Image (cartoon, rainbow, N blue to C red; front, side, top):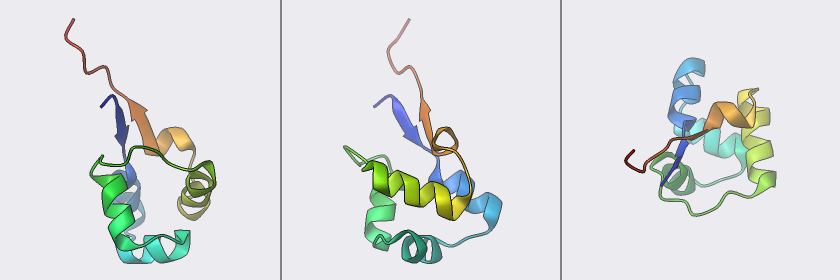
Length: 71
């Protein structure tokens, strides 16, 4: 997958646990793990909005496109 989720980086910068993040965003810790591990197929814009509000960041801080096709 070419989209990499960087939630772990932003959580580490803020010294916030997955449990606290999940509670503040309104997700289960299991769903946060699915996002962190790159197994999510989609993210609702309302969820992305909540994550950005909690982490005080931009969507680009959480999502990164990486070219995974060989040159």
